[in-house]
Length: 377
Image (tube, rainbow, N blue to C red; front, side, top):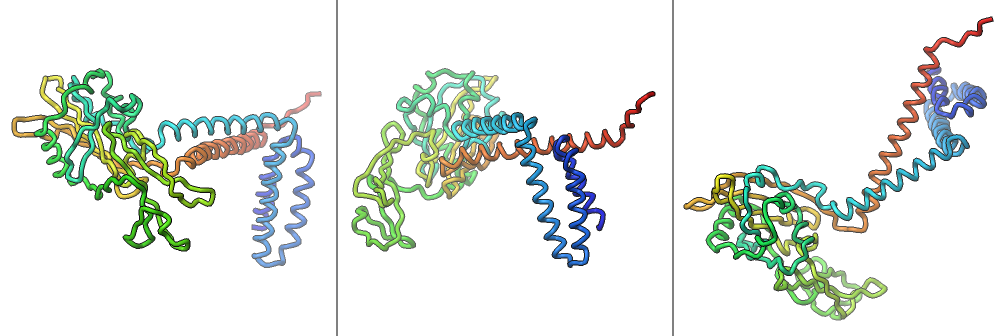
């Protein structure tokens, strides 16, 4: 142990750039050895503090020199800048386009590959008994329909249908009942669907008491705000929320926003468990039905997705394939970008430092095993 600590210090000195190491390493090693010799009679606690202080200072000095020496400064700072830009671009793309799909794969091939032709596609919402009612797609943007979370099932099937399938007749009531029976048999958990109300409510903490007027609350009472919701004819949800003043206190005024099926808020609090009902045929001309449902599992950030492929027989639906998984989305959109960017940036920096260390070790090994150059007289 007496020689291990100084030897390790000597090895760390090799992480300095060559020019700095050749000029200062001998002196630094001498100073360390003298200090190490003086603390030997002290207890182990003093020795641990000494090692921590010296090694921390040495590593800090190595990084500082690596970033400030003229020969290495431009490359290092430029590389870190590139890492930062790349991380921010990746963070922006993921938080903008893919956050919420990161743990949710596209529809399984076992469910979608059987279709040869698509005859009709309907976006539906499900009630507490799995009964589906059609959401008119004509009022939604193409992006809303194509990006319906979380399945991205339509892009997978896009080469087998055209836009006319959205204008077809609604599914027969008999089919809707058969799908409900199949989902009920699969015991898909559904939370109690929150009722729609045209105004926000102000509910006292740990009670069932709610008020429609915030002025009825006492200044020292703790409460939560439940937004109001209205279901629109085109299948979107109109949300009514209070206007907050500068003290983060809701006022009597309200503001509204429209929520489409491609937004996470569409499913928060079990407002709208929804999915697609897709009818078509397989390569043998036999009728198929694909039904899926995305639903909250009890929290704002955790969801379940279930997908079924049915053969249609004279006696009802028969399951040919089924998939299900859990997926997560972020409830605080503003945090996703910096978190993802940082998650990309830090591994890049650590990887770069690891490359420096490995290169330094390899160069040290090469110098050790290589014979010295001899001058021939």
